[in-house]
Image (cartoon, rainbow, N blue to C red):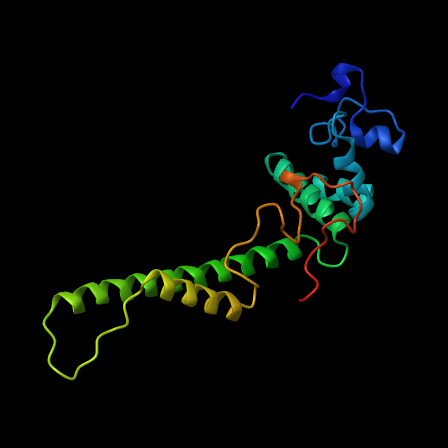
Length: 185
């Protein structure tokens, strides 16, 4: 992370704030001129003076992580002013819960299938019933039953159809209403 003043180009913070970027500028290592939107978001949400105070209070080796956290939260707040990154966290937690339910159902199917194999290979006493075998028709009926009962609307989501967009796969127009967080919190 070289200082931007060595390139005779002010850092993104000094450029936005319209001030001269000095050699000891606290923003220069973290807000390079190639990433102006990073500082624009941080400045809009937290304010330049607050970020300056925060960075001055931290040890130098902690500053990069702090700036990355501020930049992530600021971008999330610009996209979703109400929930910010909490909306993304909540969405991911719900997705983990849905996937855990799906995994539990698949494990139950495996156990049921294993029990069917065991019960069909053992001789049965007259008048006892075995498990219903999982034929393709029974599997489809079971899948449809779970799919209808599932509060998320289905086991699988279409890739790219997430209700919340993440900064690392951003293809949006920059509109804050574009793929905002979930509304049902």
